[in-house]
Image (cartoon, rainbow, N blue to C red; front, side, top):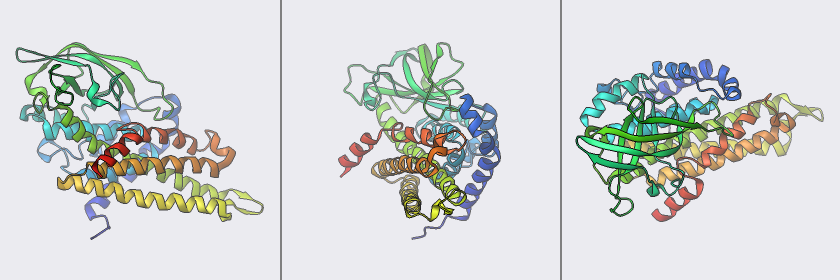
Length: 378
């Protein structure tokens, strides 16, 4: 058993760290304040190879795995979780689901464009009445000559306004049992009937684009279906395993930011004649934050490693997401507390980390859903 990162993983980590500190660190706070997503920043991520990290080499990607993506995403999310979630959705929910379940024609058509950053991928599963109950989707897919007509509304779509390709889940057979009545489809932004709905105003991740997406009789050719009719729910659950690794990695990045900012502040801030880090109450918070970060990184890396091996890992992905997201929120709370009144202001980044952390326990399966998944496996 070897806990050290391989030379290749270290190269990915160092490259992501350099990009994050050079590009993301200077603009993360101002982008959050302006609630403005940056296409230019994403293009730089594409040029660094991050958008095609797991896309096979034959389609212009690096052909790497979930563990490489997890290491990269921790570094990105240390400085800007808004870009982090955009990359996570693009890689784990769009590129990876297309690569695993897509037709040869669809892979050849879209994967090179996704890998190069020409288009961003988005994932459309959630609906107003279908959140944790993903099988309750009402978007319809009607079979027509040569393809399908898709109609429905999707909610909380990351990068909805800027994406060029959407993975959309819809009911293909309303008479089939729940969980066996869905299909997954690839819809291009330019197709007739694709409408960007309202933009969500959010507590955190304010520099990421989150919108409603409306599909009105969108014609989708047969080759743009992932898998076969009735297989959509299975594809969604399989894809979300990988997505949970991505969000768990995001939680690691935010957690690390809280720890590093708190260590620095506890050295700089003096009370009663000495740095506050020398007081037991602060020192123990730092110790707990550091221990939880190390433990949860192991969970995340193990889940990614199992998925790269092709082994069953649903339980491990849920454990990683559950533990990392909860610990991230505790770390964010403690970071604000260590900073005191200063932590409640926008002068210090822990205020933003506190807001960004909250979503990690909600999307890609809320905390209680992760507990449900884990307990069923037990």
